[in-house]
Structures are given as structure tokens and as C-alpha cells.
Image (cartoon, rainbow, N blue to C red; front, side, top):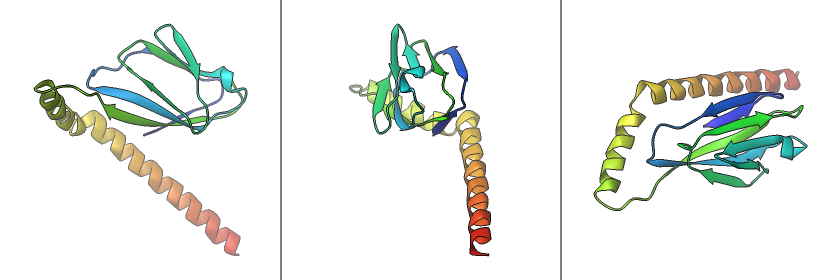
Length: 131
């Protein structure tokens, strides 16, 4: 999933609900000054860098700021937390149920609609360049 944070935005403190995953943020577009575009997890504050990843447990209290004039874009990658058996098996079953949940299905539907809008915009721009 992509996370796009507009200039001057703040995502208040929150926690993930599921301990079976770790969250990875891959910095794709980080506006300057990059130190003003930051993530707090617990008491630790970091900033994104383009092409670099931040891996964290999102069940810890965390929040995000973009105190710049540009958009911040990161790719969210969920990493399955390594467990030994039988917990690994249970985690896999829970993840299968989560993937079928309305929360995930709605997010996928929104992503597909966004992709379609971007394709139509790009096609429209390409057609006008050909004129």
C-alpha cells in the first residue's frame, strides 16, 4: 500500500492491532528538509530517506508529521513476524482471515479505483501530447 502525506499534515498517535506483522516503510518521495518529515515510534523519532526502509512494530504507539511544503510518499510493506510453531501456523491462519476482512477488501477496492483514475489521467495526458 502507498501512503501519501500532504504538506503540513499530522497523523495523530495510534497503534496497529495485530502483533503478527511488522511494518516496513520504504521512502519513495521525501521532501526537504527531510528531518521535518518524521515518524515517532514509542520515544524514537526517525525521518524517511528516499530508497531506504524503516522497519518497526506498529502495535507501539506511533505518529507521523510532514512539516514540509512537499508530499511524502512511502510504500507500506507488511512483513510476517517470525514465530516458531505452533504460533507461526496460528499467525498464518489469522492473516488469511484478515485478508478476507472488509477492512482489507475496502482498501484493495480503493487502491484499484485509484489505479484506474491514474491510468485514465495518464491516458488522457498522453492523448493530448499526441495532438
